[in-house]
Image (cartoon, rainbow, N blue to C red):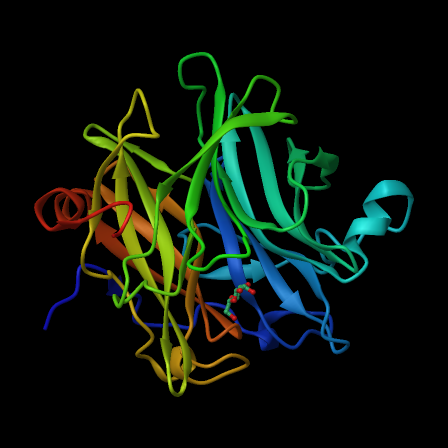
Length: 312
Ligand code: BMA
């Protein structure tokens, strides 16, 4: 059967062997176009099990070269040190008004929360502040203001499963509110256990396309797949459709086995002018993979075969 996402023939596109400093994994990378090149910020586990963020560059979006030094490591001073001591993970990148915003998970003894950083040149990043308390993960910022406010999707952890996708708004990118849940996992469905936003939302003429991860619980452990949802352009809290089918599941050997088995996990996608989107995902929390899809196919899947956005 032909899938909507076509895997790149030379997957995996990046492994720990491509990294010029000692790491155990290369996964869950945000990717963005910067001056006609592709920049990838990827997560790596160190040998102590904690994560750092490395940086790689490419001319074609598939063949990446890793820079000699990591891009972000846990901060050593002040408030950032307190909340990053266990590592920095799963970066997303958003090009907003000419600035490149990076949201990543900061781990500490107090839980996991999201930090916002900014760069103009991808040589270094400035931390702007924490934009959630514990426990939140998977923050993606919309690449433009909507009705005068910045908007983001995220996935708070709550006492009650299943964990869902929320939307929040801000006037300054640092203080967020007006939060509400917009997509819940569907019971006994491929995404029934929990879901979370993946790549920065992509603007299409029919709505904001959101690639998200959905988790299914099996006797052999959790399976992470990717799905898509479409949100209204003017009011992204209005869900136009959540595709009933997943668009990608672990199938290649490096997705099925690795550091964590049966995982495809997306933190980045790059829409191209010809209507194709490059999608990037971590395979089994171990390597980076890429593939392409037609944006219109993903949009149609949301609209033509939707499931209820808020479950039952
Ligand atoms: C999630 C996060 C991701 C990871 C995934 C699969 O909870 O920790 O970073 O890729 O689990 O292990």
